[in-house]
Length: 44
Image 1 (cartoon, rainbow, N blue to C red):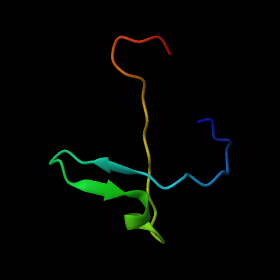
Image 2 (image 1 turned 90 degrees about the vertical axis):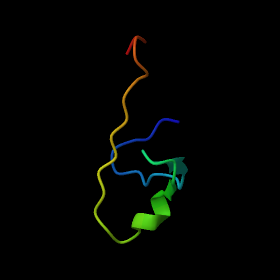
Image 3 (image 1 turned 45 degrees about the vertical axis):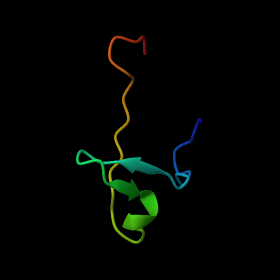
Image 4 (image 1 turned 135 degrees about the horizontal axis):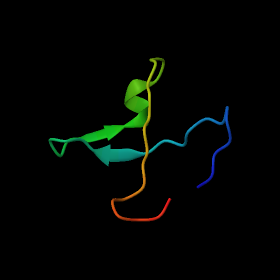
């Protein structure tokens, strides 16, 4: 999914380091930094 600067991120849920589900909506109204990076040993 391609987002442009200023677009709102779609809601999603992912496991944290302890395998607990964390949703983007859990941080509604709070500042949050999302960091995405390519899988190891892949181009990009």
